[in-house]
Image (cartoon, rainbow, N blue to C red; front, top):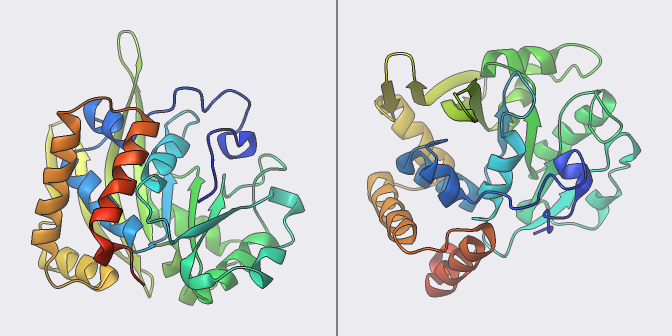
Length: 270
């Protein structure tokens, strides 16, 4: 995978990756729950496209995506797109089945981001078997698809499910620090249809995680597994063990993930 720690165009500026948070850090500061982290691990392991979405800047979209990519098996390659100068020549030299396309942001806000016809080309690549991780400024999965339907992007409805999993993040302001919380995780299926996998509401402290049979079946189908509950329990236990045994920094976490795949070759084979 591409080393993103010093990729300034990925982070949107120089120095933003310094001391970046690991997935364990994000669990520890309650950005997301451990059960949700286990689910997202399974998605990344199966090369599911993931889009982090939030309205404001500095909501932690890129931080979360980078932490999730630390869980990708080593067999996966990645390509960091070049914004307005992207020519998609990588499509001639990469294997779609094993490649994540990394998009700093889907918008026209800066030259480093993808928008317009470039996004159409990207979705054609997703049609061919590539997967993407990207960020976008949007408050809901429905708004994401609405934005992608409109010109100058104009993605057809039959391609919108390639967005994959949408993770919504809420940015709040505490007494001393900014607080970030994953508020919803949604799987987009052909149609597009929106399958809510997890919801968290800080206002009334309510939450839901894979509560419907539809959500459990959708995840099982996406990761091609008939033992979802067992897999989630196993991954939660691993994350709990790692949380209890510092250090939890990004480099240490990536090393632990690498050792996990070395010890579990069935999770790294094609």
